[in-house]
Amino acid sequence: MSRHVRVVGTGLIGTSLGMALSAAGFHVTLEDPSPTACRLARDLGAGQLATDLDPLGPPEVVVVAAPPDVAAAVVVESLRRWPEAVVTDVASVKQTVLDDVLRSGVDASRYVGSHPMAGRERSGAAAARRDLFDGRAWVVAPHEHSSPEAVRLVREIATVVGSAVRVMPAREHDEAVAAVSHVPQVAASVVASCLRDLPEPAVGLAGQGLRDVTRIAASDPRLWTQILAGNAAAVREVLLHVRAQIDEVVDALGSLTVGEGEGALGALSRMLEAGNLGQARIPGKHGAAPTAYAVVSVLVPDEPGSLARLLTDMGDAGINLEDMHLEHGLGQPFGVAYISVVPAAAEPLAETLTSLGWQLHD
Image 1 (cartoon, rainbow, N blue to C red):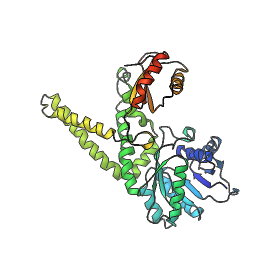
Image 2 (cartoon, helix red, strand yellow):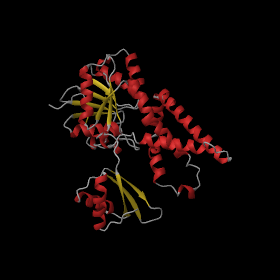
Image 3 (cartoon, rainbow, N blue to C red):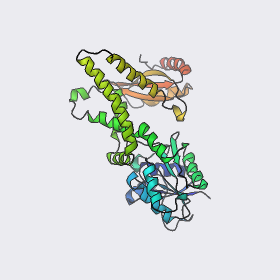
Image 4 (tube, rainbow, N blue to C red):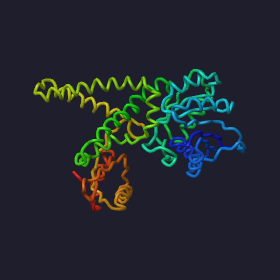
C-alpha cells in the first residue's frame, strides 16, 4: 500500500511536491484555504482533494506548504489534528517556525522542519513543475526533540522527489540561506529598482548581464517580504558585510573621479577578483563540485523550431549539454546560444555543428 501524504498549501512548492510524489506512487491528498487553488493542483496531477473519508485513513506525513508567516500555526494545527502523523514544513525560514512550534506546547517529537532549495520567479499552482526538485538541495532541520522515525520519513520525502538531502540545525540553515538566497534576492531587487526611472533608450541597451542579475527580481513581493521579515537578523548581518564592500567601491570610484586615485584601482581589482573566487565556489551540475566548462557560441535564427533543431543535432552527435543560455541580438533576427559542454567535447561539437550548417559566433 502506498504511503499517504497530505500536502497543506497548493502554491508552487506544494503543487510541485504533490506532482512529484504522485508520480512516484505516493497517495497524495491536497488541502488549501482556496478551493480554486486546490482544484487546480488536482487537475495538474498533484493528488486528490482531501476528504474525511479517505480510503487510506489519516496521513502518515503532512507537508505544510503555507506562507512563512502562518507556517508555524499550520504546523501546530496539523500536529494536533493528526496525532500519529509526522509533520514537516517547507518554509524558507526555519528557526522562527521551530520556536513557535515549541512554544505551543504540542508534541513536537513528530515535527521536523525542512526546506527544498527550489523555486521559480512565478508563484502559484499554475507555475508548478514535477521536476522542480530534481538535483536540488533539500535541507532537513531536525531539533533535539525530533524522533528518528520523523527524521527518516522527512528524508524519504525529499529523496523520492530527486533532491539531495542536507541535514543542519534550523539556525545554521537560516544563516546559510541569508547569504545564498535571501541577500541575492535583495540585491537583484535593488538593481532592478534602479531601472524604473532610467530613460527608455538606456533600458533598450540592456543585455544578458542585466537579465542574469535581475532575473529573480520578478519574484513575488508579498512572499519575499515574509521571508525577509522571518530571517531579519541573519539577512541584516550579511547585508552589513555587503554594504562595507560597496562602501569601499564607492570610495575608490570617488577617488578616481577627483583625480586622487592612488590605490583605487587596486581596491576595484581586489573586489572583482574576490568575486571570481566566490563565483567559482558555487556548486556545479546536480550539486557536484564546480566544473569548468567550455562554451560554444552558436547563432540561432529567431524562428520557430530553430532551437529544437540545434538541440536535436547535438543529441544526434552524442554530445551532452551541461548548460545553456540565450542572448537575443538587439534588433536582429537571431540570437546567440551559449552552449556549455565538458572541455573535451567543445571541438567535436563545433566541427559537428559547422558541418550541419550552423554558424558559430566568436
